[in-house]
Length: 174
Image 1: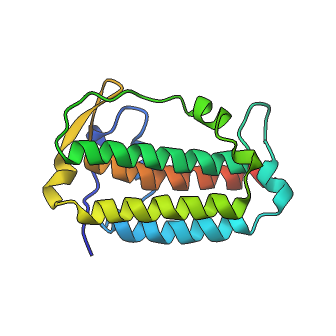
Image 2: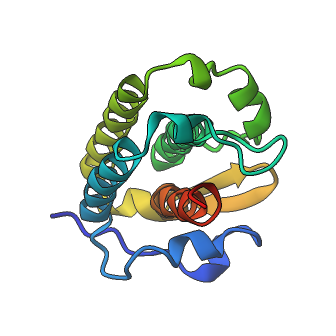
């Protein structure tokens, strides 16, 4: 199995190193991405239907919207990783995740369909990463004014999922 070394904390934008800390430091990122997908799927599908539409505070996302956010973010970060892995030095902008969710229609979707989409995106991410040469993970580019390596982007994907699952457990299941 491909080893993808965890980036150094200094490689992350100032507000993000905690996400990578949620992932073991063994380099088995592809394994963790697959295992986390299965754990997330089992957890989300175990929730009662009414919980999927719960908001723990005004203007907070529902669990369906959180899942859609995870899907959107993984697509965007995988795309960014692809560009930098191919040594594309185009400066990339940030994105407004609230706007993406507002227009997503996530709450009108069936949870099984959302989970199927999440799994498809995750499998695509794993295939992309597995096909990259080792040196590609060391390449970097600028996103929203920050220098970011490919390994930083892909560890962000894995940590971001766990971060949101932790939030669901802490704030949505009271």
